[in-house]
Image 1 (tube, each protein chain N blue to C red):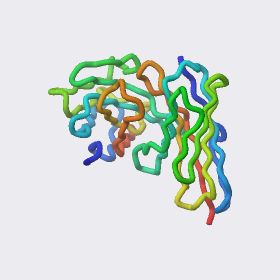
Image 2 (spheres, rainbow over the protein chains, first blue to last red):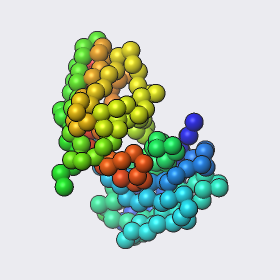
Image 3 (tube, each protein chain N blue to C red):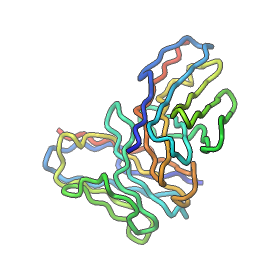
Length: 110
Length: 115
């Protein structure tokens, strides 16, 4: 059974600082890994998708890396803004099933 | 395109009562998912439909939860009778096909409180 862990559970940084969010998973036989953002009272918004054959994906200020052999992914958010405050969830896909971590709640202080 | 629609947004019920949630996926999406997200945890898959057939319901507590997707379009998730531990956000998601990666679109969810 796939177990996904996200550390830390919460993070508070001043505006402008770079964010580093970690995700680890136990079963490395994954199809892909996806990072989502969840705002309070809202659904999940997909941020980045990394296929199992890829090492990283970038979109604007966001960069996600994947080390499948060690079961780890990292999401980097450059030059954080108050609008980046949200919960970030990591999800890995095995056999058409998506397994989520518990998320990291980020607060960016103005 | 319109997103995944869910209703109601919030529901408060007493334990042992019944409740139903509704989801309308993105038009043309063959696959529909129901997830349960307990506070402080990641979403957990309850059931997955491909058109109107069930692909995976291994984590659905079938003694109290039921779901249907008639005509392969919208879906209803029911809990009867509800327990305190059912308090959670119920998220619906859809994708064009369960074999396509990264194609999940989530609704805003229904927040259920059982008192």
